[in-house]
Image (cartoon, rainbow, N blue to C red; front, side, top):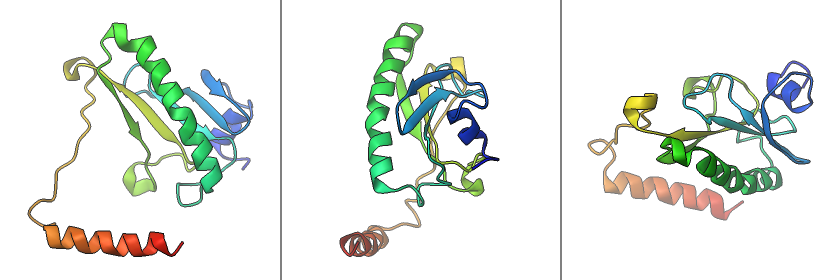
Length: 146
């Protein structure tokens, strides 16, 4: 896709701080990092979101993530890295700003140092066990038929 900024980065048409590349995957430093070491991992082929990503491409991309995570750990552990968040957003309402599938690898440090505070509010009052079980059954049925 000629207008996609991530396609241009993967093709070498735009500069990036590349940390990993193979035939199908490209990983580079985020230019607007949430924390030091924040990486983006993308397929070289253009897919807008996870719904468009073929299983074989996803499998390879996800197989690279532990290698990158370990490299981040070894690089930033001495600087106080406490853990790693792996994040993937789909759609503008979820925070996706570049519509080329990508995963964020975001090292976590002391919250006072980096300000990154992942989390969410559980819906315990509205999502009863019965509702959760009904959702599970619907998803289970769809995954068994595919």
